[in-house]
Every structure is written in structure tokens, then in C-alpha cells.
Length: 487
Image 1 (tube, helix red, strand yellow):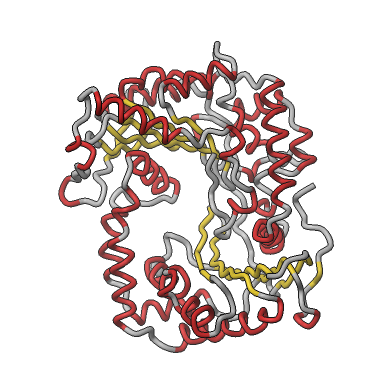
Image 2 (image 1 turned 180 degrees about the vertical axis):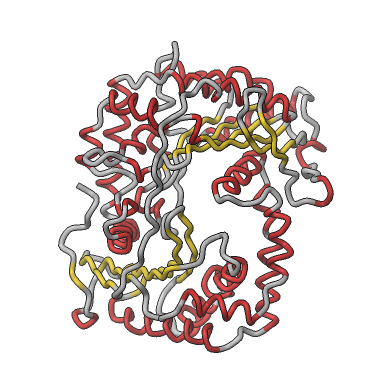
């Protein structure tokens, strides 16, 4: 079960829930089935290495279609392998709508939707997936509730039958619900030994404040304990509705076949009631500094600034700026100066995060307590340089080349094709946004990078800073006795 990033580290806040259902063997099963088909001569080696051919030199030949029953979807036809994939989301049905007192409802639901549905109990449902190399999973992000499926074309009828049953007739038997509940609670308890998870939880509570995003999207112990199967049935009926649906498909099927499968799964879902959007997050007026003391030889430090949205005119300049600042690994300014030259940390990185109602840029590192002040001062100096001086033109050119050159690597699997098409829809992008990406990244100049830095880092002091670990006495942080959003 995948997670959407929040301030670039929401997954660490929740831990790795794939272990809850022990379905991380799905890809192995799929590859094993492909190997069997190779042995039988069904797939040739040429098919395995043949790249997807896009029309008119497009990055991805995404096409917009409407199913026979009126559901809009984006589709990428790719016949290089006999694989079909689908990504879908229910917009606005993520953790932000977990009821008060039942934090974690969406999380528990995402774990349990495939634990029995229709006429199949949990064991029979899982055997049907395993025996036919069908990968089916659901995910509860901050903003949206989503799912994805991958199957060999030969098993597509069964795969879409299982997905239909999961969405229309989930069982939520007590045994399965209790098992998933216990696994989630164990995950939360074990995550408290991880400083970066604790820092992510503290940062989300600190920076989001009284916004719904401040909730622990992975659930609280008391919230998970209060959830009943009836709560889960009610959520499916009221929130996983057709009016919220966003869907994309990819693989060895044409748009007519894709539309028929989409209607099978989604056409009979009910339409829900209109939901008012949330308010956009207002960043703290005064910088917030909070710390949680924990026995550790190193302290995790996170710093956050309000950032630019994906639809901002300077978004592409932001991406180039971030790559240069801390997103480019050892070639980035933060790593070069703070790790390589000063030896203050083993690693430091920056990353923008984009939610429906908030956009941020995170810088995170871990260092010894005595080096925290030196490290944060060095970060401030680097940000000042980005604001006051143009980065060398050759470095800007190298960053652009990397961002453009690495783009095709994001689409190395059929599943990534439908995933990209879904993400673009959720972001409100045009269907040719990936094609525009190359031109817009290429057009970024050193002046643009500097302007983006000035807009994000209006002050080099973060809007929020948190520390988890050993805390020096002279840093002026508010000490937190209990990490919120756990119990």
C-alpha cells in the first residue's frame, strides 16, 4: 500500500505498510509468470526490450477518452508486453476526511478492501490474486484515496472481477479488520524507535497547525481501535463515489477495451453529495521551532518553507533550483558544502512537496547535536547565495540535462504509464504536460533559478524547524514532551 508524500516524508511517518499484508512479492509473481510465458514462447525477448513508441515524438502518447457509460479517462496503449494496468483515485477522499475520533479510517480501509469481497473470503480472495499474478492494492493519501492494479492480459477478466467486488461488495469480516488493525497499531508503536519518523510526525503537526493535514494520516492508536466494520462500509458507500473518480489505464488494450473494463468496475458506483473544499494552508506568521528529546548519537533536523505550486509559472525553475540545491545527490550545493567540505553530516537533501491545499520545500539532515547550529547556519548561507547570485550557467545546464534525460526512466514499466496519467489528472495538468516539460525545463535560465529561490526563501529562516534526538540547550527550541498524533 503506497503513500503520498507530505513534506517529502509522509511515508516515513507511517512506516512501510506493504508489510501489513505481505504482498511485496507481487512483482516477483508477475515476473515469474512472464518467465513462464517466455518459456512457452508466448513472449519474445524482442518484446521485453522494445521501448514504447509514442506518436509524434511525444514523451507519452496519452489519449483522453470516454467510456460507453460516460466515464472520462486517460489511456496509454502499450503493446510491448501483455500487461494491463489501471490507476484510479477518489479525489478528496483521503485522510483529510477521516472522522474525528477515528483517525486512520482510510488507512485501515485501504488495508482491508482486498481481504475478502463478493463470494470470496480473505484467504480465497488472496489466493485468486496470488495464483494469477494479479497485483491489486489500495492507498490512503492525505488528499485522495486511490488504488492500482496490474495483471497479465490473459487474466484480465478475473482481475477486473476481483477489483469490482472489492469496491462494490467488500466483506470487512471481523477477523480481517482486527488483523489489519493490530498490524497498523504495531507499525505505529515500532515506528516510535525511528527518529526520522518521529521528526516527520512532529513537523506535520507543527507546520500544519490546525489544518486537517496535521492529522496522522496513518492513524492513531485510539482512532484505529475505535473503527468498526460498519464505519468502513459507510465510508465506501459515502466517499468512494463516481463523482470523485479519476482513472487512467495503460497496456496491451485499446481504448474501447479499457472503457469496457472501466464501466464494469465503476459505472454502477453511486454519486455522492457535493463536498466543500478545504481552505489552503496558511503558513505560520512567526517561525516555529520545536524539539523532542530522544536518546540518539545524532539528531534529525527538518526545515520547511512555503513553496510554489505545480501550476505556478516558476514551477520548472523551482525544479531546476531544487536539483541544484539539494535534490541532485552528491552534486548538489548542500551535499558539496555541508557534507563534503565541512563534514557536518552524512547526508542532506531538499525536496518540494505538493498537496491540494499546500506546497512546501523541505530540507532534512541528521547530524551530531554539537553540529546542529553550524549545519543550519551553513544552510542559511547557501540559501542566501541562491537568492543573491546566479548559479554558474554550466551547472544550470547540467541540472536541466539531468532532469530531461531522467524523465523517460520514470516510465520504465506499464504500471508507471497509468500512474503518470493519473497523477497528471489529479494535478490538473494538460494532457501534453510531459511534452511541455522538456521545453519548459530547457527554457530555465540562471536568472529564473535565482528568482525562484527569492520567492521560496523570502527569509532564509524556515517557517518551521523540528529536531528529534539529542537537543543542545542553547538553540531556543520549544521542547515537546509527547509527539502528537500517535496515541
